[in-house]
Length: 412
Figure 1 (cartoon, rainbow, N blue to C red):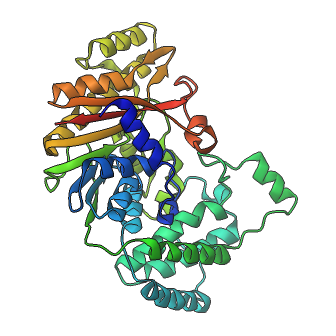
Figure 2: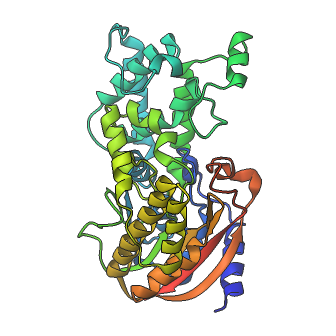
Figure 3: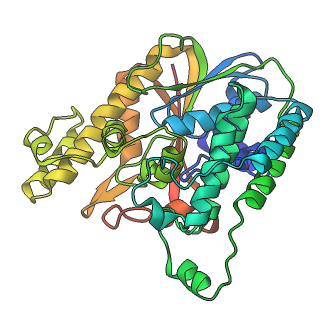
């Protein structure tokens, strides 16, 4: 097949109506479902194993489930992995409904005083939540946490995380948490009503409907809070890998979910947050001491650009670019290791502009893949709808604005 043939298949897939479960939890920079659906239908059969080693909130895993394929997901963000698990777990609606009725009764009967309850980790929590909203959220969270351990409890915790931003002072129209002028004006004019329990009820009812469209099949999904640069031993002999790795200097994914991660106790202090943020591929969290050594990547064009950035006094960005490609070399090496012979990898990636330097990431990925025994069988542009991509407004000022991605297809 030629590039145009693969592109036609992908474009056709974009017209297909998607499972509502994809909307369970917002996640910025989310992979559109059409890409894994196209890849799964083109390169696998029912019962095959698929991997997404940058799985985020589980788009690939959910499409695999919908198409009766087994899937592994890997991500360093524990909240993303949790959401991916919830989205791909089939639970009978009636079972959830019974627990929901009891949970509502427990909340209504709960007369405990939450004004002295320990706050979750959330820097300046009283800035982000009005006092009454915070107390109601503490009550709601406490009652959910008292449910028996299991998939139904996880479902309600997922609903809690998904609705949380809507009852906060963080403007849902913004990628990064911020108490915007728009919300401040609405609050000053008394035009915004926050009702924690009513909002949660709406969130739960909507997501219970999503459960009904999740298919009944034997497909297994498993998500690991782990690292793409060192994949869990359980992952091997996969037929297809679909990935949307972070872009250089694009969206700071962890920061966009910091409030939710704190309320669900995935991070409990600033040190934990900073440690996790430093580990992610594409991190910009480097300290002065980190800039003393900037490693070569072995990619001639990249090393030349890194040197140019360093000599121009942009040591931090030189480190960001160097670290990114060294991390992606490890990640692509791991993909090749766990991919069965004849298997395929489908990558969505974008080029970047760093301090005026155009970095053709897609070409460097092709070079790295070749070094790992992977043949590039397709490479084409994939334009996207500017009205639907929050990522357009979230790129750093020195990274450039994207108007298309690249779709790369490899075979082992």
